[in-house]
Each structure stands twice: as C-alpha cells, then as structure tokens.
Length: 399
Image 1 (cartoon, rainbow, N blue to C red):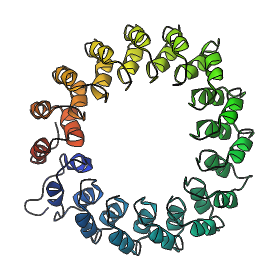
Image 2: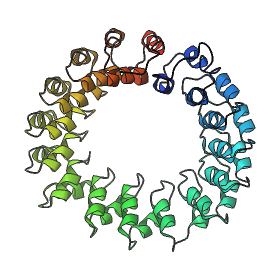
Image 3: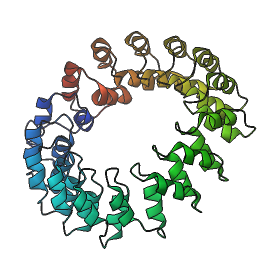
C-alpha cells in the first residue's frame, strides 16, 4: 500500500454513503490496493471526473465499478463501452445512466452478456430492442422480457409461450399488455399466476379473478395488491381463513373498521400484517402498541405511518426488537432519536447512527461509541460532514 493510503477499515461503508465529502473519496485513487480503488469507483459520492479517471484503471474490477456507477459521465461510458473486457461493457450496457445511443451500439456486441444487458436497458432505442427480440440467445430474449421500457411489439416478439421462464418474466413486467396479463392469470403454473398477482400494474379485473384463485399463495398476493377491488378486500377481512385475513390486513385499501378488528385478531400473523399497514387509524395503532406479542409491536415500530405518540410509547418498550425498529423508522423525530441514542442495546444506537433525521450533536456523541454496529451505521448513514471526516481517520477496523 502506498504511503498515506488508508487502511480498509470503514472505507467501503464511507464510500457507499452519498454524503461523504468527495475529497475523501479522492484520497483512494492513488492506493495500490485495487479493492480500495474499486470502492472509490463505485461510490455515489465520487465526482464524475474521478469516476472517469478510474475508468482508465489497469485493474478490470475498478473499471467495472466505474462503468456501473450512475454518476459516470457520458463520454467515459462511451469509452468504457469499447473496453476489451466484456464484463465492463456489460456494466455500461446495464447502467441506467448510459445514453440511448451508447446502449444501442452495445446491442450489437459480439458477447451474449453485453447484448443481454442492453436488452434489459429501458433506454435502449426501440429499433434495437425489436432486433434483440429475435436474438438467437435465450438469455438475451429473457432480459428483454424483463425490460420495463420495452415496446409491446418487442415483448411479443421475444415471448415464447412454451417457455416457463418467458412466461414468468413477462408476467412480472409492468410493460406487459393487459391482454397478456389476463391470459397469464389463467396459466396452469401457480408461479406464473403469482407473478401476475404481484405485478404493480395488473388491472383490477385481473386481480379480482386472482383473488379467488385455487392456490392460497396466489389468492393472498392478489388480496394484498392495492389495485384489487376494495369490496374483495373487505370480504377477505372477515374470512375464517387466517391466510386470507392476513392478506387483507396488509392491504392499504382495507377499510378502517375492518382493520381495527384485524388489529385484535386472534392470530398473531394477522395482527403483524395489520401493524405494518400504512392506513392504520390512531385507535388501531394504540391497540397494537399494547399487543402481547413483541413481533407485532416491532412491526408497528417500523410502520412509517405510525402516529408519533405511538412511536414515543414504543421507544420505551422492554423488547429490544421494538426499539430497534423505532430507531430505524424514518418517521421517528430528532427528540426521540436523542433518547434512543443512549439505549443499552448497540443495535438501537446503530439505528440512530444511520438515521437521516438524527442531529449532528447525536452523531458526534456516537463517534465515541466503540460498538461495531454503531460505527458502521455512522459510516454508511450519517449526513454530517465532520462526522464522516472523523470516521475516515479511524485506521483500524470497526470494533
């Protein structure tokens, strides 16, 4: 390792933090360790000129990370698209920041892996996607069938009805036509019907039929979907089947009266699903805050829509799992985080260390905490420059 080059320590986490000062990332560029240079090339905090420079690195792993970085400038991506290593070219083809014309060039690459990556790129020019739909390599067509930006004509051209994987991929693609999803909703394979039930844009009429599916898992997935007709969710909330009630309890469209009843359900799995529902009323939330099952209270503690008074009560819960979830909840405010920063459980303190709303004062205090989870969470999640600079000076590994 060259003189002045930092030890690995917390650097992979610091580099993964988009708030790390760019000048800290620059200190890695001259390191003899290709691992540290790769860490710098992959960093969301790395400035574009640094990524471009690392894109010329002698080590292929470093160039690969530079090619995959969303902040890599267009000119550097174009150059890396001509790299001698197909892994680098494939990373360029898969990078969502890659310009359409560069992705189009890579769609003609000799390597299957590169054409497959280009086939999955939403910005790849439509004529190139139509050509890739007839590619002789199955993996290329499979990647195209997962592309949410693919035109319907390309999806249909790449589709092979007798290929299970083709059916599975198009069933989960939000670009699939309503007619195709409707046909796949009647597929003989439950896994295909399940993929349709989980597709974010499956039409309500299709979800309605899947909510009555003979397969329990498919039925539950459809009943959890926010586009499923509300009357079906309401009916499911009163079902004698625990799996069906659990699905209804997790659906944000579940009506408040039904959700309140589900919050007091005899089955812990149903109450746990209700605890994570963003549509919980204040009454239902307080009901669940007093649940005898710690897992249910922990589920409520992680609910980003939970009322603040409920989170305050849960922050004093005797179960470590509950306080950990509250400490990681984006809705938890600075005052409550300050209280949790002194918690006896290091994983609770780690939640505060990585929380975007924690104050600079609390993060500075946690710098003195030697628990590995706390140091690591600070490195990965702190937004305070002085804290990150202080962590960069720690040469030893955390803990």
